[in-house]
Amino acid sequence: MHFSALRLDVSDAATRHPYVLVIMQSEVERLLEARAKEVGVRLRRGAEVAGFTQNETGVTVELADGSRVRADYLVGCDGGRSIVRRRAGINFPGTPATMTALLGDVELAEPPAEDIFQERREHGSFSVLSFGPDWYRVLTNEFDHVAGRDEPTTLETLRKALLKIAGTDYGMHSPRWLSRHGDAARQADRYREGRVLLAGDAAHIHFPAGGQGLNTGMQDAVNLGWKLAAVVRGRAPDRLLDTYEAERHPVAARVLQNTRAQTALWRVDDHTSALRDVLGDLIGIDEVRLRFAGAVTATDIRYPVEGTDDLLGRRIPDLDIGHGRVYELLHHTRAVLLDLGGLPPLDAVVTGWADRVDLVRVRPAGGSDLGADAVLIRPDGHVAWVTRAGERPDLGALRTALTTWFGPPAVEMSDS
Ligand SMILES: Cc1cc2nc3c(=O)[nH]c(=O)nc-3n(C[C@H](O)[C@H](O)[C@H](O)COP(=O)(O)OP(=O)(O)OC[C@H]3O[C@@H](n4cnc5c(N)ncnc54)[C@H](O)[C@@H]3O)c2cc1C
Image (cartoon, rainbow, N blue to C red; front, side, top):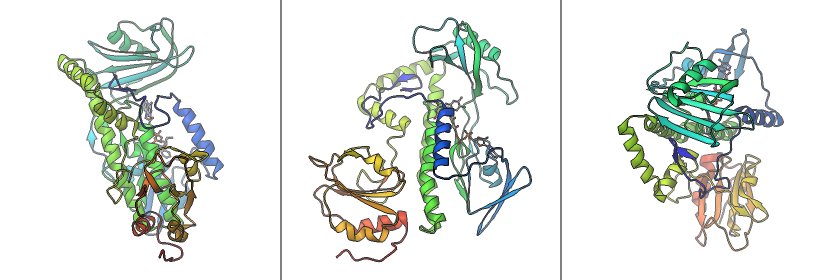
């Protein structure tokens, strides 16, 4: 990966997938849509939200065609210019654009030899990425120009910018997609107004450095989805929804900071070049490199979950267990109490939550790589309770964690 085009080796990151996988966003959207349909979600295309009103019992959404939809909750996932955010009166403070970035998926008659070619030159920086047998993504960053909203983006605009920065247009032709964006970085000052919530670009926008936007938005949705489902089904109290902002707002705030830092480091003056040299040295130190890698891949997120154990609030690693992997247990999007140490007392506690939590018992040969005898994993993969190998499990703390995240037990049980 890279941090502002400084090489960032993530090959030893704590994941099964320590590499960059280029997947077109349209493909990600196609897969998500197929999955949504599979689980019975009704998608309505072309239904433009014009506004909404809310009271204590629900939200009435007004569509541009004059029709209305009544819902328990409304989640605005309507992008950076979100009408839901504006109508909810939620502010979007931040920093305005200071530069112009152009992007084109094009064919090149004379491409550079490297698959990934990135350079900073006197008039800006540019990248040429090989995306397929015949096509390339060309990106330019101009720091001496902030494009007006109505300025058109054409192949000629991209060619002009590339000629100015790189001195060649690599013989570009046949554009498939052209786009322009700046480095404005803004974040909703709150993610919730009553029964209305925000997720994705509606809640945060930033320069798309390191491909962090979609990840941040999808993780918002994954964090909110199971909580909203529990509240709507009456299984958890409405205040569970407040943990969404508490957990996700700081994550996006950090993404805004690292992308601001990345665009600042792309500038082409002598002082920035010196700063890049210094950072380039630092990033060579393993501890620094891993810190940056954890941040841009968002694998180091730790939500503020009660307790001091380092695993609490973190995403559970996808370890091999028995004949499978931990993440396979999460495919049902239910919470999992994973017993790796053979702890019979867990049965009595979890019975009250059996409709919401799966108790899974596996004894990995040679013990657990996690160093834990049992972990309570939320449906989004984050750890809500842990008992370390060989330690006496704190069943009171387990009961508290279960109540906090999944509501009160269906049947009161004794664990004595
Ligand atoms: C040039 C560029 C390159 C990027 N590259 C990457 C990358 O490599 N990796 C990455 O992770 N991220 C990348 N991003 C960021 C990523 O595209 C966004 O973070 C992501 O699309 C946000 O998803 P979203 O669903 O929140 O919002 P959007 O994708 O903006 O979707 C919002 C949806 O809401 C709809 N909508 C808007 N208003 C209304 C309304 N009133 N009523 C009904 N519907 C409405 C829109 O039609 C749209 O379908 C890039 C962004 C840009 C601009």
